[in-house]
Length: 239
Image 1 (tube, rainbow, N blue to C red):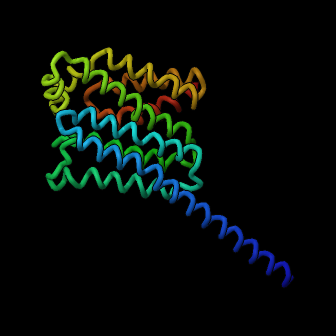
Image 2 (cartoon, helix red, strand yellow):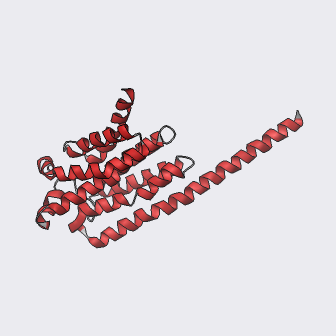
Image 3 (cartoon, helix red, strand yellow):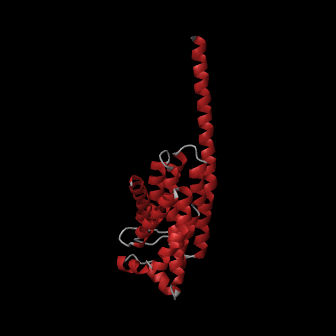
């Protein structure tokens, strides 16, 4: 019995060592995939506030390596939760202090805050439940909405008009920005992602429903797209 007890202690100690190594590995990976995001924030600062809306989308794209790590590399959820919460506070506090980082933040528009908030909630909640679904929800926001925003921005005939419209917080003006070509761009960018990570039919339907959620103007895209993705997936799954 004494020998069994010693073996149990050694086994527990060995498992503890493995767990610590996994957490350390997650931390290292978290730092690595965080670097592109920090670089994007710095590079977009050089681009300047005239392209604020495009800068946001560039920062969106920079989160893709983190999503790859979330899906395939991270062993536990802790690094993801802490990092996404940190970015949420990093984007929220300047708004609260009236000191927005004007090259990607707009006074009165909390889109980038909602973006980080959804990464925090969805990434944390679905890590042990359905990681592919969580990644689809986040990638449709990062890539789908990112491509959509850039296409719409540059299709305006005058750059000055695009800047004025896209920095407005007026719902009716924002509605005018929701052009059909942008929605088509969302679907084209989103369907391959959804089909790759979900079943073909589910992925296609989820993308179309998320495109509708993106096109509406009453709820911020960064909230509407991931929420629509999650809800539509489970509704379709029940059929």
